[in-house]
Length: 110
Length: 115
Image 1: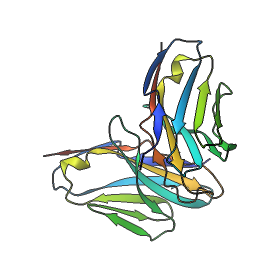
Image 2 (image 1 turned 60 degrees about the vertical axis):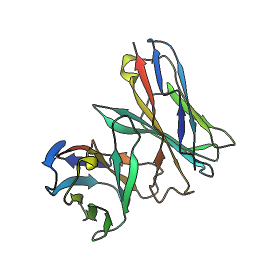
Image 3 (image 1 turned 90 degrees about the vertical axis):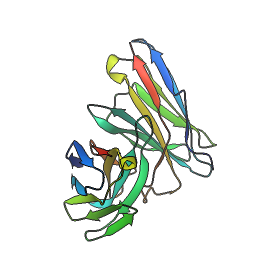
C-alpha cells in the first residue's frame, strides 16, 4: 500500500531561520511527488511536482528536492506569511489519485 | 479565471440523514476528484471522475457515492450519515486527461458536521 509520512508534525521558527521539512514515501512505482500548501479554512494550493530522484524545484523561499525514498522542502529565510500546513503527496504509476501525508504545520514568528 | 467552487460551504446534519455536496470545476477542466479531510486521517481520496466516468474509487463504504455531469460539474452524496463523517470535503479539478501532472486545483471545501 502506498504510504506518505511527513515530519515533523509541527515546526515553529523565527523569521529568517531556515529549516527543512521531510516527506518519506513508499509507493509501487512513483509517477510523481507533489507539495501543496494549505492555509486555515482553505483548500490546498499546488506548489511543486517532482518526477525523478535528483530533481529540484524552487519558488521564492522554497526549494523541493527528491531522492528515491524521500523529499525535502527547504525553507530559506522564512517570513510570517510562509506560515501554513505543508502537504506532501505521491501518485503511483497508473493511478488517478494522490496519497497525502498528514502534513507539517509550520509557524513563523516575527 | 474562476476557481473551483464548492457548495454549500458549511452544513450541519444529524445522524441517519443524507447529504449532497456540489462542485463546479475550473472551466475546461474535465477531471474532478473528491477528498475527505479530518484531523486524524488527513486527506483521503474518495473518487475521481473524468468525462462522467468514475476512474478511481477510494476505500470508503458504499454510503459514499458521486457522479459527474456532462458539463464536468460533480456531486457527491453521503447517505445514512454517521458521526465519523464529520469532515471537510474537498473537490479538486485537473486539466490533465491522464492525471499525470498531479497539479490539482482545490476548492475551499464543504465543512460537514454530523450531530
